[in-house]
Length: 277
Image 1 (cartoon, rainbow, N blue to C red):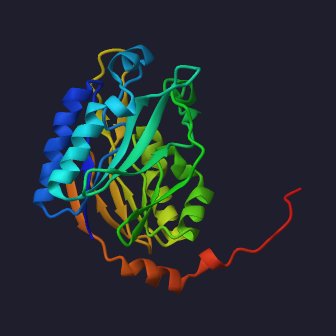
Image 2 (cartoon, rainbow, N blue to C red; image 1 turned 135 degrees about the vertical axis):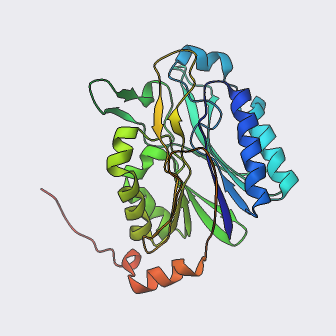
C-alpha cells in the first residue's frame, strides 16, 4: 500500500486551509498514493472559541468535508481526514474533534471523535484545556479499507496505550494518529511514543501533523511541532517529514505486521492479575 501524509500549517480560515489541502492531496495522488492522510484540525487551527463559532459548520454543511470527500471520489483513493473541528448539538456549546475515513467512492466509511482531551499545563506560558471547547468521544473505532483494518485515533490519544492495544487485538494493521502536537512535548515525547505504539501493537503507525506558527486572526498564537512520522511494526521510522509543509509518500508492506507479531506475540499473552493495592 502506498500512503501519502500531508503536513499542514493550517490557520483559522477554513476556506484558505481547504485550498492548500486539496493542492497537496493532488500532489500525493500524482506520486501514486492510494491512501492519503491529513493532520488533526485540518480545517481550522484556532484558540478563539468566538472565532470558531463564526467559521465552523455542522458535519452535514461542512465545505471541507464535502470537498475532500469529492476529491477522494474523483481520484479513487482512500482518504483519512485527520480531523475536522465541527459544530455539534452540545449543551455546553462545545465542538467535535472528528476524524473521517473516506472511501474511494467519496462516502464516509468511518467517523471517530477524539476520546482524550489535552488538558495540560506544559509550562507557565503554554496551557491547554481542550475539554472546554471540544466534547470528548467515547467510542473506539476500527475501520475497514477493503481487506485492511485501520484503528482511528487523534493526537493526545497517543498517551493512552490501552486504546492502541485494544485496537490491535481487534484486528488493526494500521493505526492513524493525526496530530497538532505542542513543540515542547513534541521534542521530548513525539517520536518515542509513536515508536512505542507501533512496537507494542505490531502495527504501522501513520502520524500526519500540523507544523509551524499558525496564522490566527484572534486568540492566543499557536505553534505546532511537525515531524509527521511513518513507523513500521518493528519500530523503524520509515519517514520523518521534519518541520516543512508538504507531502511524503511511503510504501507499506503489510506482511510486516504478521511478521512482527509472530516474532513477539505479546498481543496474545495477556494474563489476569490483581491489584495494585
